Image: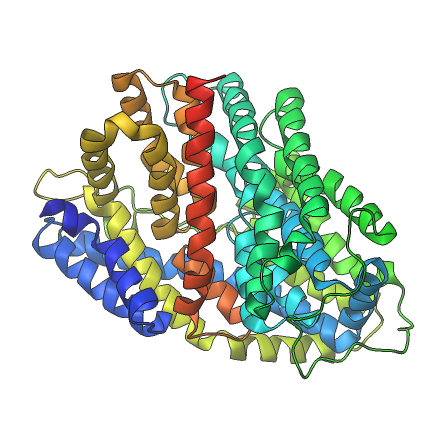
Length: 526
């Protein structure tokens, strides 16, 4: 009975969004009500704690909406300045094949953004870019979410590893490096196929069958090998912090050079998921390609500088701190918002630089701001409901019945009955954590102590178990509700969140299965 109650935060969203196909605004509002009532009546949470958790969720919603606004205002500003047209022409000069564009934009550029910013930012940036390239909205959102997976296990400069595993006994920099090496070793089996899986998902939208995807296998396999191989070497030599950034940069260079020369690529231009109303500009834009890309270059540079240079990082974290600590006096319930450190601030600043660098009127930015705010209305409602539920779920350890938190109860219940096949269960637990909380870091922070205890109890290699937890959490990023809500909003599909989750769910399951197989092979063969 208690396990069913704890699972309500998973069952209710799945039922309302995926099975009954409700919009996120309605489905998550109902889910939130159900979880809050169960937490109050069955789990024994006090009303004050629940109210504090709801306020925490609302505060966190504003932090995500700010990132969403930044991503939208940058894209809309570039549309108004003509920068998007020039970027599109640049991609056309590399390859007009939409399958190639998916790998370069969604997978590799998205991984670079993930390595610098994390926290759901990549899909909010690459989804609109794919839309601007002519992709159908549903395709753009789905592909952007799936592509933001392999890099997530290292996230923003290694945060899921360094923070997610920080509560493991004797965790230190050497331990984090060991885990990074283990993760990248296992991902040589799982992650190497993500570019090809993207092709399979992409071609299903066009109903053209597996043939169009198989044509891309040689090139996507090369990209997968280069990315995962680079990640493995970087983890070995440099540790966990720069895996996503450096691996994506290296692979981006390889992908661009090989695509431009048609190496391992089929002849012809595949454009079967292009919007019917989309037209490629035939006249060459006057704007230079570097000028067009400058705002996005500024985004990456500022993200890196504020996360790598200690003094600048400290300034960004403390200068404008909107963090809410001990909400309603409940100790430990905190919502962080370091305003200058937020990707939303950097994206918005890049939008300002865009109209200055591209020599356009400030009105282009004001118009873009108005358009962006108009897009976000329904999204705000969906996110508030989602994050209120999430925070009640996460904070449920603060109760009068002396029960573990709901996520801990789920983990320990699974561990007691599935210990014998734990190497296959562990990545699914990571995935469930990310699905609910919306964060690979929070999933790992929450479940890594359970993973540690189970590994110790049944004699499994600890590093392998924690590595598949991280891979599973990265896979969960594809289906977590608030990422889906945000990705839907930036491509104009608010209300279609359930349909997007149905499209991404299969890939997320495949990824965690591959992670479990890789872990099993490592434990029993290598």
